[in-house]
Image (cartoon, rainbow, N blue to C red; front, side, top):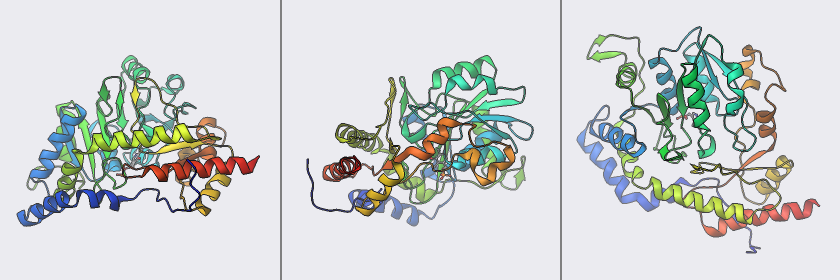
Length: 373
Ligand SMILES: *Cc1c(COP(=O)(O)O)cnc(C)c1O
């Protein structure tokens, strides 16, 4: 398809989704406002039930954000000072912040060059007597390679805590992510595949003790009013967000299918860039549609000029961030993650995109490469 007309394509447009669901969302919000219960009410309780049953976990606890879901999961597992947690440098900095917040030491392993998720072959050499957990990230909406990660964890008696903040509904084999390790952590940041109208998060687990511990810690450490039995914090999902999320959860599968449809269309139209690799047996839900190009910076600038914002997730791998210099890593330590930071580019993708928008972006990229040669 040749589109000669110039148009602006947003990276994400949340107003299209609200316009489509307006009546349902407004009614849900109104009912919370009229009911006068804003914290720890029915909507949170029901959303916890609905989301855990959607994912296939026994217990769920709504919390304040994805970062806090990870933070509380680590606290509830008793991980802290003197412990090491194995994760990847190619992720949102929040993954690593949660580990250092509990006083544990993040230990990095590089990612697989095709899926950009934790390379299972590089984990074992990083396991030490201090290692307590492996924390894989289901990046861009595709599951990390959980099979070998879980068997290593089993062999060395390590916990697995999944960062599923970008992967609501993604599968590995026959199960949804967030249900493989001892704990699964989700974010409902507005632009995530399941997004609130503010911050929110969820901890999933099949372990009653962990669930109860998270519930305690996220509410001041109080077992009941004014009896503090643990040193806690305040990190709760609120009723207004839960009411919105209950409406949106009913559309999640449809939205994920639309994202996959746009991803397929991109992949069939694009020329010149490396398109996302789909690992077999894993359903990618395309939180982000990420291509790779040696000419990434020039391509991004060209798209921007033509009215198409393209973003980089992530331009600086965590081991090279200023905040983590004290860990002592250097440039060259994780070559795959470092190459990703130079070469990846996220193209606009969201369920309410239009076919002509996808085609327009793909066309621009084809033109860019024709002019390059
Ligand atoms: C969004 C995100 C987080 C943090 O979630 P917040 O709700 O913004 O705190 C953590 N990890 C990954 C991989 C994310 O994409």
